[in-house]
Length: 472
Image 1 (cartoon, helix red, strand yellow):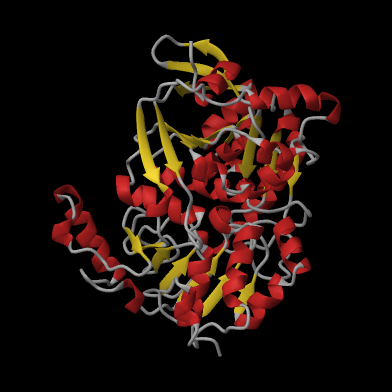
Image 2 (cartoon, one colour):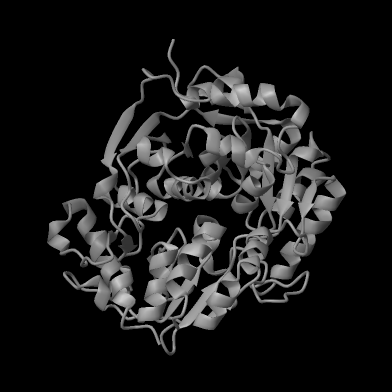
């Protein structure tokens, strides 16, 4: 009987079948963050329980830590946020779980450090109370975003109940054009097929264009699967993944490596495996993208225009008109005519070293437009150290960017510091609903290179040629 990659991962972790389409699966890793982690650990303790395997639980400070350079150990970016930090630290210490604290050299966004440390790797099941946990499927892991109560249950029992989802394969053949990124590919898919296009299915990405992506690009692509309404995302592990994981702190022991590697190579869909649905994409059709509305679905090419409302399917017109009002854009308006007040580069979507390198290439020798606030926050301390070793920080700061301490930072508003109401911001993040980056802030999603180009131009810009007259 043929099987998909997901079928194989499910079989490895299946503990019991409820007979109603759901089952219990074993949970190998639980990751927590300070926004909800202390709550889950306290609830567990108050129920008189302890983590079944504390060595498999990781509590990370990332969501509301301050991104101010030189921040204090308990410094948060939101009012009252320090309580979340101190609570999570205390509860994690009491429970004996792995703690990645604010001042830990390993600290960073949970979905960035999980690959860096090999907390996630092929074949492992991993959950976290965060919807972008699907990022880790890029390594061939069964990665699922859950609620805090599910994380609490899994810590106590080692299992979780899951309704088995249907499956979708997205095959991307050919090669992406130069300058087209994994972020552009993800936005292209969501724009073309809708923010509800996956319908809670497991999405497996495959094809020559996917094989060609780096590990960091795959993480970006899988990160945005939740914005496509996917249950999770997967990419079959290959030599790139095996080479990436080997030798990292929580990778399988060298004494077991040969057997582990053999098992990982078997984690791929059989040639004649069947899916509930399939999408085929020609990579050459993907262009640099940017959002114009309040959903990743509402996108156009960076040289495109805001669509006419009547050109959209009838069931999307009311939402589009509402988005245009909030974003202060007009039908048929050229996206490149929109002036920009601020930019942000970072997040679990695009805060890795390759993202910062791409933006730095645009910024080198250039300045951000006058009056524009530009912020870059590396996704982890490891990324920050590597970027500084390459002089990338100097490029950003010379251009006029703030260079922050790792964390989620301005990806979402948690109270406290943000862009002013009414600001138009180009951001490398993953969500842009009303108020996502602050009350009244208008967020356009794009790749780091497009964000950098827009910062220099002072208007939405993507092509390097558009910057030739902007260097000062």
